[in-house]
Image (cartoon, rainbow, N blue to C red; front, side):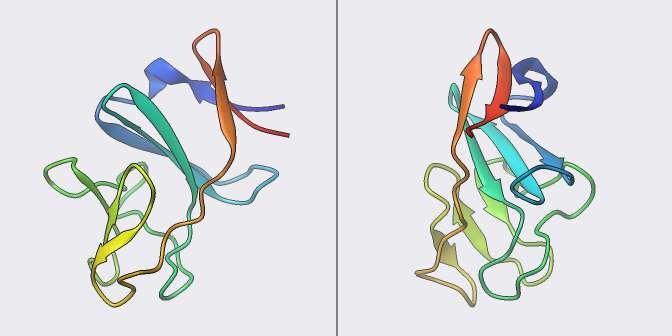
Length: 106
């Protein structure tokens, strides 16, 4: 198991990036009582998504947004709903929460 952080280290709603993991760069989003983890790679350009460190969400904290071309992804499943990669999706990373800690699945 690879520990990412304590759940309380991520605002709700909010996001946090992790550069060095066994799965490569990933980010976690806390939203609506759940945690979602995705590879930090835009399906359109293959680049990191964040605007600034730990800033993966749009201004309303309702969608994941690519900093380069503004593509918007649904938090719950990573599907692109607007932008040049509509119909593509972010790569979900298996994870679990145990005792208030977020871990990548083996």
